[in-house]
Image 1 (cartoon, one colour):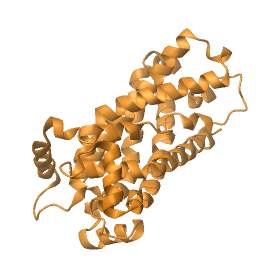
Image 2 (tube, one colour; image 1 turned 120 degrees about the vertical axis):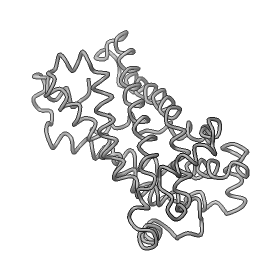
Image 3 (cartoon, rainbow, N blue to C red; image 1 turned 90 degrees about the vertical axis):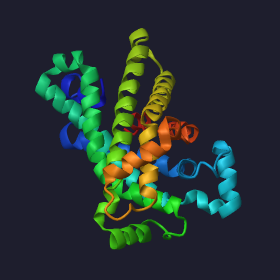
Image 4 (cartoon, rainbow, N blue to C red; image 1 turned 30 degrees about the vertical axis):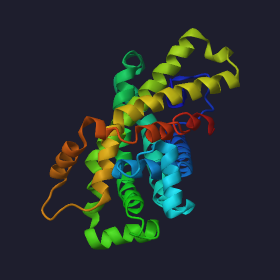
Length: 297
């Protein structure tokens, strides 16, 4: 079980943190991990978004996409959207990881330890879904700004100018035009990531005693579990990720609602088109946020 659970149910470790102190640690760790890792991978995200928005031009895969961006716009273009990426995923990481542990503990309080343990997959799913919902409320405006900057390089010079321009010209609603797609992207992604991570780790530790394993071996288990979980989550959420990029590229036509735009985009993409950029997305999914949180204590 997680550290949050151990802090409540274990009588052998009275010195462990609990309550607000514990969850704030998880939130801070998640914020730092997500903000840093997503920020570092901004160049990959730029290429992925370009492939999704203009597959006819960017049709040479991840490496070819890097070369095209550098050739056409210079190396600096690979850092487009760095500001909103770091800020957005800093907030998202705080809500996601802090909320996940909080909601798991609330499930234990409501169901009781034994019932929660027997139904832990359902607890993982519900806790991760709730945590991601609130995380996406914080992430959505910054993700909308990022996509606008990447899709329209001359739109603004950075986070503050881009955010302010959208707010002034289109209103606060423009920041949440992609809220539906971001939920369809991030909620299944987070649910799959946490559940697969927990299940892979549980499977390994059911065959090998965790307490007898070295720190290096435990790190390897966490790395492997996070990698498998990231790949599974990326495959589940890729169609919504593509739609999110499309809907945030430009504002809708006068009188055109979000639902109408989503249906229109889905028809245009088709199943194959919805997986445009999956190679870059799989690479992006191999980041540190799922497992490195365990090592920030």
